[in-house]
Length: 146
Image (cartoon, rainbow, N blue to C red):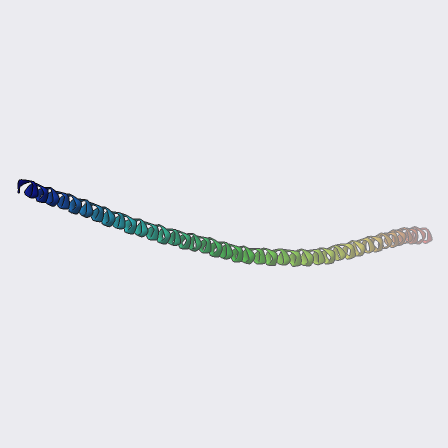
């Protein structure tokens, strides 16, 4: 009987060991499952972070692009303003050139007038001199007559 009892005890011990092994295996499986689940979560997080990062990068790119567009528009406006100023300056220079031409024409006309005036004055002076000499001759003749 002792042998049977000892066999029963052995068998129960064996059953307990097997149960413990099975529980260990099960817990290992659940641990493994949990680990897999955590890994899956990590991958999802990593993917979402990548997606977020990509979205962030795209947003930054768009901001840069928009700021470049704004800068480009601003630059175009500045260039338009510059061209307007240049055109205005060219118009001013053209007007100035025309005014200078008119001024020079007036100066030339005035110089011609002065030259003419000088010439007339010379002629007048000659006439006066001639008259003076004529008058002097007249005086001399009149004195002689007397």
